[in-house]
Amino acid sequence: MKPDFLKLLNSTTLIADGAMGTMLNARGVGFEKCFDELNITNPAVVAEVHREYIEAGAQIILANTFSANRFKLEKFGLHNQITQINQAGVELARRVAAASFKDVLIAGDIGPLGVRLAPFGRVQVEDARAAFAEQVKALSAAEVDLIVIETIADLYEAQAAVQAAKENSTCPVVVCITFTRDGRTILGDTPEKAARILAETGADVIGVNCSGGPAQLLRILGQMKQAAAQMRFWVKPNAGWPEQVSGRIMYPADPDYFGDYAVSFRAAGANIVGGCCGTTPRHIAAMRKALDTTPAPQVSSIRVVNQPEIQDIETEIEPPTQLAQKLNDGKFVIAVEMDPPRGLSTHKLLAGASLLAEAGADVIDVADSPMARMRMSAWAVCEILQRKANVETTLHFPTRGRNLLRVQGDLLAAHALGIRNVFVVMGDPTSIGDYPEAADNFDIVPSGLIKLIKQGFNTGVDHSGTSIGQPTNFFVGSALNLSPQDFSVEAKNIRRKLKSGVDFFLTQPIFDPQMAASFITRFTNEFGPLDKPILIGILPLFSTRHVNFLHHEVPGINIPEPIRMRMEKAGENSVSEGVRITAELVEQIRSWAHGIYIMPQFNRYDVAAEMIDAVNNRA
Image (cartoon, rainbow, N blue to C red; front, side):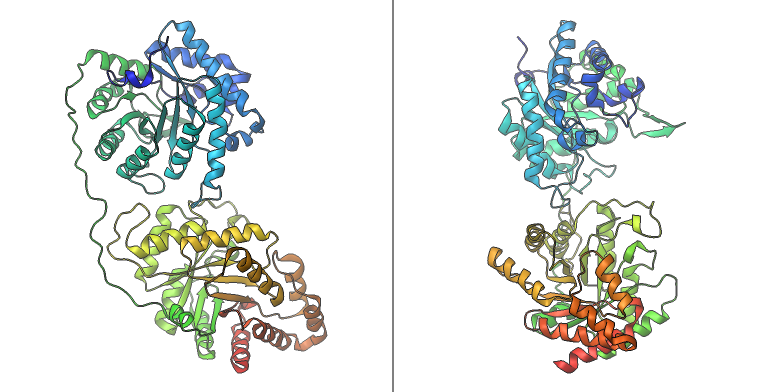
């Protein structure tokens, strides 16, 4: 009979195995391959790795199932083989362990899903939990001795995984977080916060794996231990930070170094130690030898001084922005979009902004790299317009192309420059712009950024809960599609943004006010009032060619036939006719909208000014 995992932790420090991917790659399996599929297609190579770790002294073997979840297997067309791959991995590890005639525990290994979860991604928590549940059920049916959830960077994902494990298995559950070089998760959470949240999930063991080398993980272990002293801890560091040498990924930490740190981990309170990326059976053997030959201390010799995470927040309160005040006072607001210049000159930009301000524009919206074209920084343009043209601005703030560190740094920079209105959008993909090969990743979706600003920065803390010294005073807008192809999807997005704290909405250009009003009526009937100001997108038409392009080639824009016919009949007077049409549209939405958002095409700010005059003259 195998020993009880949790009872063993009361009397000894267990040794887990090391890296699987490193060992498979050393045997010629490329990193682009699906390692989990090898349980079926090449079990011998996986079995050889398990055997070497058992011979090195590992007491816990993780089945080769790290990426055997729905999302990752789907990339290889294997999502219909979740159960088969997971159970084959467990059975393979069990056969190797049985052949060794040693008491070895078999763990079902569950890694991250490889997708971003809400509120910082598109996958909902319940969908993630369902994906984890599929894998847990397969592993549990294969009778693993414990479930190990590891290399998770997002605490939302960790909670979903543990919940799925607890609901679908009676096995003990281990959950481990991974950290970046700065000692925080990729979403900015500290080891102390991670330990507290993981402890609350109901997991039996919590810990840290991957990340950096032993030195970093020893510090993190100490911080986590102080925050959740009652918990048992699992630690599996990488063999240092990897570097590329002659096309190969190399890890600097040698086995003897790991042996020394195994003793330190035990002294710091680790109940299970092992290795992650870059480690081999030699590292595990060194850890086994060090623990066996070094007496365990009676009292932990590691003491980590826990620094307070949140400092006193300065309470200086700034007045609301002019845009916020005008909307609050019931004024029909006029916003106009401007694009940053392609080069250094801002003369035309300033001239256009001055023209719009004199015509009666309440705020200038500055786009950020529209259509993924290289342009001057949008927040620099906002600062220039506010300082030199004396007009308030709204900064378009796309999440695409920014990681979480840059997002927060850019927000602080914008606030320091006096920019208070921000319009949060996903942004245009780089594939359509000047640099299609440029990085296009992002850590956070618009609803997540709204939450970060409204519930974080505007309360005086960053995403991780650390003080930023003084609360920001951002007035936050987001996009609203009043003519979506799928009402339920757009309604879900709206509700998510409302819950995050959005202050106002800007819509895409509309040409059918009745359809737009019908959307709002339907939303109100099903979910309650859409009680945030809405600025309706207005796009002045210039010519029949312009109309046909918008109608036939721009997604989301549908121009009714009567308007197309009017523009065609206008001939040489099409620009003036376009202004009249947009002024009429404004009159039709004035009773339920809170303002308009003019998008002048071809930098024709004179036409925008003419339209502002027409709108104001009809007021």
